[in-house]
Every structure is written in C-alpha cells, then in structure tokens.
Length: 327
Image 1 (tube, rainbow, N blue to C red):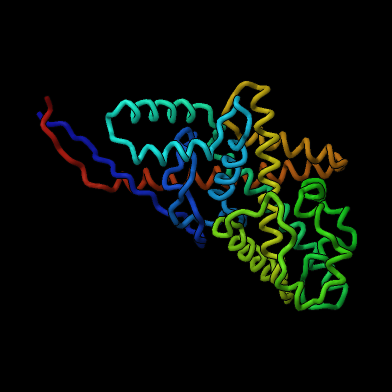
Image 2: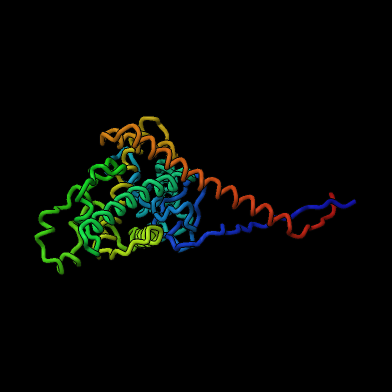
C-alpha cells in the first residue's frame, strides 16, 4: 500500500504592483526578536496602497531609536553591535567566546521589538505627514506664481490648518528652521546649503530621499502639477521623517515600559499618534480622520499579505506529488 505525500516548496509570488527598491533586512520575522539590524541587503519591496515611504527603513530607524539609550537599565543597540563584531574575532568554543555569546543573547532579549505590521503603520503615518506638507507646498507655489517649491513654502499660508500639523510642528527639523534668515540668503547659495544639522542627520545612504522622490512624482502625476522641487527639499523631508520616527519610537518605548512588554504593535503606534494629536490641539474630527486613514491603509497591507499567502498555497497545489512507501 502506498501513501501520497505532497511536497510543498516555498514560492512567494510577488503582488501585481509596480515594485520600488528599498533597503530591507534579509529576514523579516513576524516578531523581530533577532539581532538588531546593522547591515541590510537590497531587495525589491512593492509599493502598496500608494504608500511610498519604506517600511523596512522605518523599522530600521524605529528599532535604532527605541534601543539607543545611555541608561544602564536599557539595552543600547550600538553596544550590542560592538559585541557582535568582537564575537567574530574570538576563537569559537573558547571561554571568552561562550561568555560573549551569552551576553549577546541576554541583551537581545531586552530589545524593543516590532510586530509584523508595526513598520507598516509607521510608514503610513510618515507618508501621510510628508504628503500633507508637500501638497501644502504645491498650493503655496501655485498661489505665488512661482515654479519652484522650496522649504520656506512649508511655513507660509495656512500651514497651521493642516491635518498633520500637530504631528510635525515640534519636530527639530521643522521647529529649528529659521525662515527669516533663509530668505535673506543668496538664493543660489541656499539651493546647495542644507538645513542646520539635527538629530535626524544620519548616514545619507539610509535616508528617505529616494522614497520621497517617488512620492512627489506620484503626487505630481495624479494632480497634473508642473512644479520643480528645490534641491534642499528632499533632504529636509527625509530629516523630518527621521525626526518623526524618533519621536514615535521614544514615546512608544515609554509606553511599553509602563505596560511591562517589549514588542510594539500597530495599536501602540496609533496610541502615540493620538497622544501627539491631542497634545497639538488637533480637533476630534481631525484625529478621527487620521486614525481612520491609518486603519484603512493598514487593512490594505493586511489584505495584500493574505492574497500573497493564498497565491502561494494555490501555486503549491499545482506542484508534483512525491509518492513514498508507507511505513
């Protein structure tokens, strides 16, 4: 008597959407309890739900800021990376190697982690903020009769009426920009000068500039807008997004500490966003609309994930069946 056994191979079919190149960790488990992301491999990640901000890069910065602390009670991701680098120089099996490995494992357990859809939630918020600001800038340029969008346009007009204003108004990149001084600068010089350095000024290779360009291109095409983007604007917006992720990470970390848990979820991020909206005196309607928008986009990501898994199962059903002798 023989028994049929189906051999299922892992074959993940990409969604039918235009891909964009992002930096993503080689492995992205539902709960990222592994070592912190220090180096990342380039893989193609699709743009879903018109969200152009990189989910993997949001995850990278969120974990970096949530696990960067001078407190002896918290794990410092940079110190952990140094330990992991030193581990490579030790002789495997030696007492020093074993002790160092044990310390790394203990510190890994203390990391603030992200559930699978936490980076998606952060990307949705960052995308909302930067597009809200860009659209305001477009309006200001068109009303002024000019053809180039510059940073100063983010401070003119009724910017305080923007739905996302409460989420970005106190971020260092936005709050520390001196509009008056900038307007006095020679325009040719100001196009190449970057805004004053803030905590957001990190390695340019890990910026959000590429994704901002993609998002701006999409906005211009959907609105049939013919506006040139100033050289400084992309870096400014990238720094602003990094500032935002840092704020979300630090407040989420405090929230998790009170709750005595170490894994952040979309609901934790949404709670922090709601807090920032309340702190910024946003109306109840604005807060409700933003939170509802986050839920809507998150559902798109979750549905896409289900579709990919269903496609994988459908494809596996067409694979050959291996027949083995019953024991």
